[in-house]
Amino acid sequence: MPSSRTGRPPVQRAVRRPAVSRSPRDNPLRRLYLNAKRAWDRPLTAYYLILGGSLLITVLGLVMVYSASQITALQMSLPGSYFFRKQLLAAVIGGVLLLVASRMPVKLHRALAYPILAGAVFLMALVQVPGIGMSVNGNQNWISLGGSFQIQPSEFGKLALVLWGADLLARKQDKRLLNQWKHMLVPLVPAAFMLLGLIMLGGDMGTAIILTAILFGLLWLAGAPTRLFAGVLSIAAVLGVILIKTSPNRMARLSCIGATSPQSGPVDCWQAVHGIYALASGGIFGSGLGASVEKWGQLPEAHTDFIFAVTGEELGLAGTLSVLALFAALGYAGIRVAGRTEDPFVRYAAGGVTTWITAQAVINIGAVLGLLPIAGVPLPLFSYGGSALLPTMFAIGLLIAFARDEPAARAALSMRQPRFGRKRAGGAASARGPRRWNTMRRRASAARSSGER
Image (cartoon, rainbow, N blue to C red; front, top):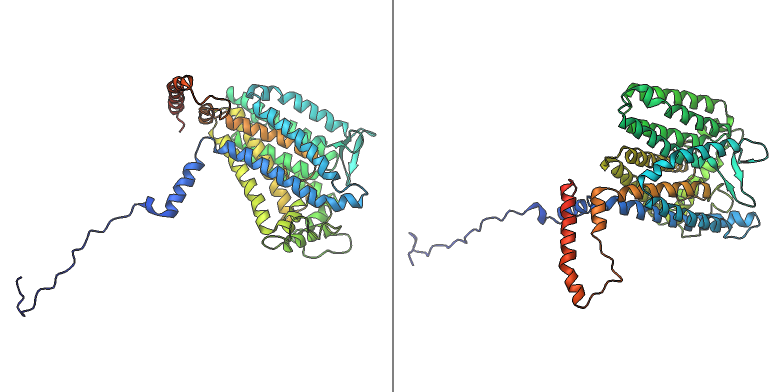
């Protein structure tokens, strides 16, 4: 061994290995993000979000209706499960409507637009006939069906405006008439104002706001110019200010925004304040299912307009955030369906339904949180009320049908094989194997040729 000048053996240095550069995919968070993004972009994501999200909201709503309505039912000398049974019956009927709507072709949906509009207008006019229409909480917008069953025709007016407006705009787009302002506004805006007039005759300001939101959503999807959109919005805002100024009840509701204590006198914010109390006492995980204190007569309309407050008290922040996440997923799926289709009717109808559900959820939750005036609208799929649940579940069926009708979703659904009822053993099954595989290959290649992945 050669020695150094000092006579000492040389120090052997460790050989440095070249640094191995880590790929971004090796990062666990990055990998998790990529997997989530890949799953989010799958063809059936919107289909599963709409179906699963709506069913979860409905089931959780049934549980909360049962919990929030027991005390109210007992105070009315009714069985504790009275409101729950009525809501369960409406959910079963709504489930049938959802299934039928999800299996109907688009042409049949368009054919039903005019009959549904005519029926809704007839029933909304029938509400104003003395002896037929009923007044509930000061609003003349109900029709008695006998016994304890009632129907609110204005709820079906939302579905009628979505279907009829989507069909009207789609036909005009096919004829390339939407670049003219008169074809964009007429007869959509006059028909919407007719429905708004029939609703306001009964004093239902909340439903009128939702209908106005649907109208603006359709105009925005149709590509209305900014000046035209701003003009219609200004007219609606002026009419809204006049209607609020001329009603002491609506002025009182407007003054209760951000209230922290009930006031005596002409302005009573009892409902708004006790809704905040219910949310504040829930904490992170709530007081437990059925353990709400505010539903014992302190919080009015605990099972209808303010069911979100009871949810916050019993299930806490975790429960309310779960409800918000479900509505956010439902809204995203609706936007995705409207954005990926090439059929103008599907785009307008999906956008109208998404606007309807998200706007109504925002108005209801905003009122419970004290950020918006109390408009008296239920939380979609969640609050008690069969008249609101039935058309909403039919509209969810529309979204499911549209999500299934996407080219990539159709290809993914067609490649599925039934898990039951197929012979697994024997020569016949093995003989059919290559033929089934070739069929799946042909379907997959057809899906790729359409531009979808």
